[in-house]
Amino acid sequence: MPRRPSAPSAPASLPTAEPASAAVTPNPWERLRQFTSARIALGRAGTSLPTRAHLDFALAHAQARMAVHTEVDMDLLANELQAIAPHGQPVLRLHSAAQDRPTYLQRPDLGRRLGSESRALLQGQPPAQADVVFVVADGLSSLAIERNALPFLRQMLPALAEQWRVGPISLVRNARVALGDEIGAALGASLVVVLIGERPGLSSPDSMGLYMTWQPRPGMTDESRNCISNVREQGLSYAQAVHKLHYLMQQARQRQLSGVQLKDESDTLAAPEQASQAFMLGNSAAQPPR
Image 1 (cartoon, rainbow, N blue to C red):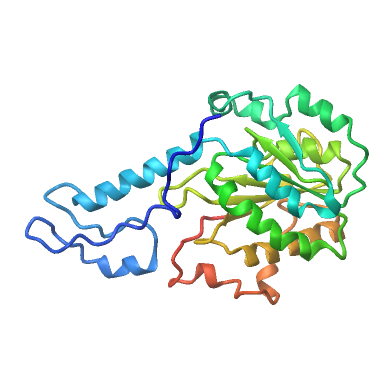
Image 2 (tube, helix red, strand yellow):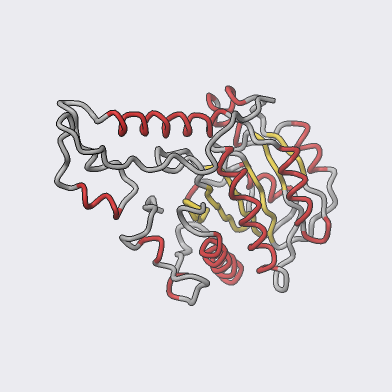
C-alpha cells in the first residue's frame, strides 16, 4: 500500500502579504484578508502573482492531490477505532467494489456498493439490533479521516451512550457516501452515519463530512440524507459537530425521516460552543455552503 510521504502537521498556511518591494504592487483590499481564508488581495508583480503567493498556491494544490491519491493506513485506524468501539464490538473492515484507488476515482458507481467479499462478511454478521451504526470511509481525502474521524468519535460515542444502541463501526476503503446505506441496511440499523473525507479544497485538504440517513437501504439518493460539512480543527469544531449531529439524530428518530424534510435547527439550542462562531467574520476558516 502506498505510504503517505512526510507532510506538514497542518494544511498549508494561508498566503501572507508579500514583503514590500518595488516589484510588488499591493492590493487595496489587503486588510480584508484577516476575515477570510480565501485567496484575495494577494498583490501583483507586473501582471503576475507575487512569488510567495504562487508558491503557497502550488503547495496547497500538492496537499490537495496528496489527500486524494494517498490511501489511509487502515491497520492503524482500525486498531484506534477498536479501542473506542461500543461494548468491545469488532470493527468491520470492508471494501467497496472499486479494487484500487485509480478505479475508485474513475468509477464513482463502484464506490457506492460493496465488494462481494465485504457483502458476504456483512451477511454473516448477527443482527446488530442497533439504533445507529457509524461508517468511516476514506472518500476523497484520506487526510481528513486520519486527522478527524477518531477525535470526533471520541466525543460523539459517549454522547449517545444512554439513549442509543450503537452497532459495530465499519471501516471502508474506496467508499462513496451511498455505500453507507447498504451497510446500514445489512446490519439492520434504523440510522446510519457516514464519516467521509470531502473533496479537498485549496485551503482545506482535511475536511470531513458527516452524512446521516434514516432507514438506510440501497438505492437512496442525496435528498434523503442530512449533511454536516467541514468538520476539522480549522473549521466546524468536533464539539459543534457532535451537537449538530446529536440534534439531527434525535429529530430523525422522533419524526421518522431524514434529508430535505429535516432541517438543522440546532443553532437555536444551547451548544458547547456558540453555534455561530464558525461563521463569524473573525473566524479563521470560512464554511462551505450546506
